[in-house]
Image 1 (tube, rainbow, N blue to C red):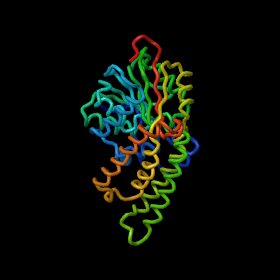
Image 2: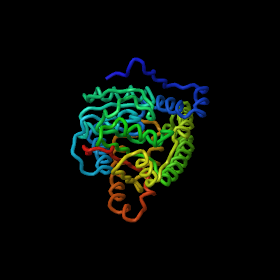
Image 3: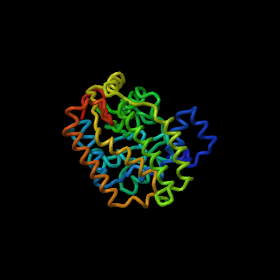
Image 4: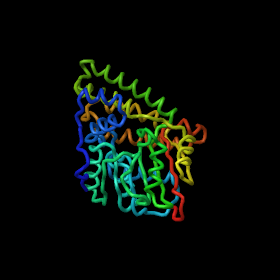
Length: 325
């Protein structure tokens, strides 16, 4: 459950000079940004490893794949972050053992720590998604959440996924921003951040304002975020890339329209105010609102809104072979 001794150590406090250099080097930016976020990432995005997120991760898998014989014996999470997708899928019965990789040493460290706390059989590597450090035909499943849009050459990464999959093995990637969804989400986020940080300058709302040093650090992170977010996707383009990489049974699906219009302002507001202001009652109310809007998206909006206008895209495909799940 440890990072290999020859893997680099996390660097959670990038200097201004390093940030400036990262503006011209996207992979350095990926490392600095995600190392900076690793220890607080789960809190920032309300990630947990209990029934709530197990159900969410398994729901994304089922929405992308449909009925499938489970569990997969060995799974790999690409761009694992803190392990959110794979660890919750393992707890949800999708895979028995796992491996996690990320370009960020900090994220691999946290993912392995989370796996150890959960008692899951997981190993990890600091690795580039375009050159996955595992042998051909190793895994039954490759998965990822919100990772493809960080990878410079997405088709090359998908080819690598197919290389390390066993014949008949499957890849599943969820949480990828559509082009239209990213446009409205970013604007909602910017407006909410500006409004919240402006209003909390008022003396009577001073208790709702984060220290200026934290706000400045968040602004520097946001500047790097503009560098690390490389792509948005049209679902049809994702399908073409996966097919071109050599996959069969390729299918893209999308989700979150009303839920995204609600969720992005909420997440941005939460990032701009002190954590202690966000009570458990508030968090449950926001989560329940998201659930209701997700139901609306699935049962109503999906029938009238074209798939490319939903925020999240998912893509799945299978390596040609005889043992497809």
